[in-house]
Amino acid sequence: MSTLPIMLQLNGHWDSIEICKDFNVDGIVVNEDSNYSQLNSAITEHLMIDTSAKIIEIKYTVNERCPPMKIRNDMGVRVYMETKKENRSLGMYPLCITVRDFDLECSISNSSTIRAKEKDLKFLRGHLVDSYSRLPSYLYILEKTYPRSVVKLQKAEDNCFLYAFVELSTSIKGWEYCRLVVVVDGTFLRSAYMGIMLTASTMDATSSILPLAYAVVDSENDTSWMWFFEKFKHAYGEKPNMCVVLDRNESILNATSTVYTSMPHYACMWHIWTNVRSKFKKGHLKLSKLYFATARPYTLDEFNERMSQIEVIDTCFKAYLYDIGYHRWSRVHATVNRTWTMTSNIADSLNAVTKDARELPVVELLEYMRALLEHWTNEKLLKAKGTFTYLGKKIQQRVGGQQDIIAEDEMRASTYHIHTVIDGVKRFIVCLQNKRCSCGQFQLDVLPCAQALAALRHRNESYENYCSPYYTRESLLHTYEIPVDPLPDESKWNVPQHIIEEVVMPPTGKDSQGDLKNKDTIHMMK
Image (cartoon, rainbow, N blue to C red; front, side, top):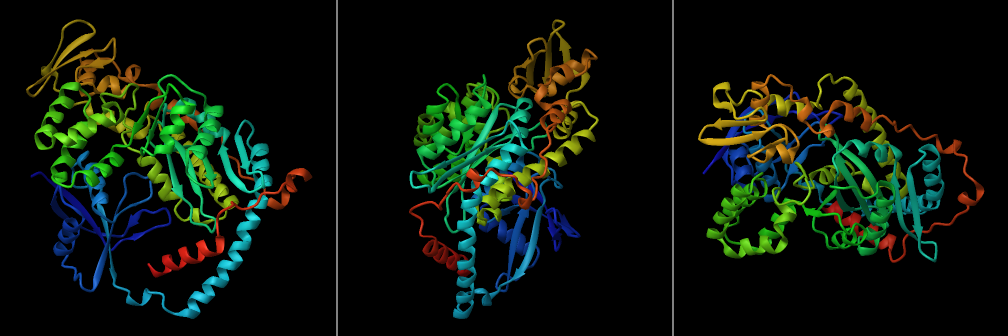
């Protein structure tokens, strides 16, 4: 059984931008197939933590653009292990360990505390209702401040709120310089009137999140997702080789199939695995490693080899994956190039960033999203201007790390464009003219693989002409060239009287007092 070395960062603190600092360092080695209990035990035993009086919090950072991810259960451990296996060195993806005392006094049993909370909630409800009435004015100011943006409000016949949709011109223009992969997701709101926030995102030249559109809807169903995609298509259109990655939500599937009749949609491989765990109780630890190894290959030969191994373990599991459709979750079977977007992780990361904001009233939530895009756009543009390599930082590091993998004596030119590369016992054929390699990686990533880089080095030629323009610094600069300027103070808004007088009521069918009271009491008890 394979093992992984993991660095532990102890007794540190998280600064204002969620970076762990001032920590001590230790390390452990664990099995790749460890579950949450095994990982927790390995950490507490190695650090000699008394689990009868202490608990530990486990977090790690995937990259500087994402907030820390917290490991709470077996799925969290699997996500971490699969991420760690991409780079097994000790210093990559360290676990940040925080040790806490059990706080037995945190249970809410004091009735006066609950009554005080209810008083605050009554005040908050009034503000929530007021937020809906301010929504037309806010959306009007958005349209005036950011020309060529798409901002829509949908109400029911009784003037009750249904949907609000925002696509800022910065994102619309920026997407022209990003990969044509859209990741969509919906997440619950936690304000009194509940609801769902729908988002669509992609990745820029540094593999960072670029939010494309966001909406607040009263509920997640076929109708709301249909409305969302219709507005999305109005701004972004339908482009060749465009695809959507989702969590296999039935409403999203129905909406994408209706609005984008010819656009392929792919599943997040993690969400498929979550379904697998519930359907196939036996042998899922063995199947886990094989399933992810089957989803990622760049060649059919490697895919078929992995599927044969799955068939030996569980023929029903193989049939289940076949019924889903190999093209939905396998990289090599995808009908258009989804590059590295095998999961909906960027949507999950965006949900994590907006976790606290999802408790806000509707206008404040939409403003939070606008301010987040303003901050990210400015920050990423400054970093792009400070980048002096041809490719974005992370992509440049990836290419740089592969340049010297293949030795000069392991490669020979068959023709000017075709080269044979020997890597250990494997033989690869590289065609530079067609930007292809028999490993499959060159053509699917649209980025030179290690073998292609060796062939280019043999020809004394730069790799720059063989990379997708989506990965370049120039594309990154264009992505964020339209700034998201701050909105004027609300007291300075110049809104027509008919917009101010437009009536928007809170969503119907929501008992704000009961829902909020019960939900908040449960939250406090937890």
